[in-house]
Image 1: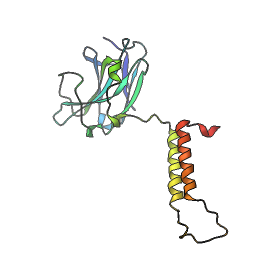
Image 2: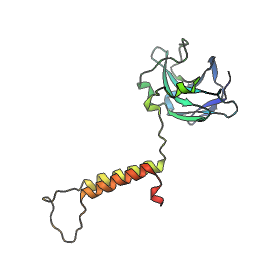
Image 3: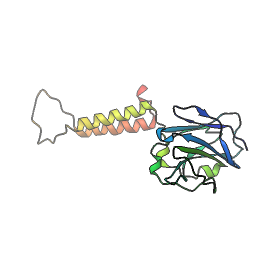
Image 4: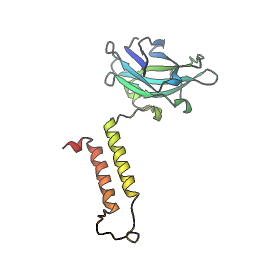
Length: 200
């Protein structure tokens, strides 16, 4: 079976030379993986997966004995032809079942692997990837907006006083902390419904 996909370490050349290690099982070597934060796996568009199938994407790093520890990152399909995964920090997580059978070939300590296992689509959606491999799909503007309103809320409520603590000042205007909290909650709700609501 030949499937047209490739792998890229962020900041490195694209790899299109997957090694087929069994029927429907492919691996890419990741040299110097400890200095890489993210990998991208994507289809070339030249050869799709068979109908009703996709590819589970795994990350494997060598343990202290040089044996591979496998972790599920996610999957790609003809309908979802690319994915980016965070691999930095995964060495601290436990590994799962080896998707490539008994091929426990010792690895060099400086080389990890990305494995792709072609499987039925319904099986892909039932698998549970390593949580820390997920890359946020929230755009940078939405992240900025959330950080900004969090900062405003925390800053403004740090000045909150009870009525007994207040010193009357006729030239000063006061806003109840409950009003700030209500604005904060309304803003979050509206942003979750439509990140572009502020444009209207």
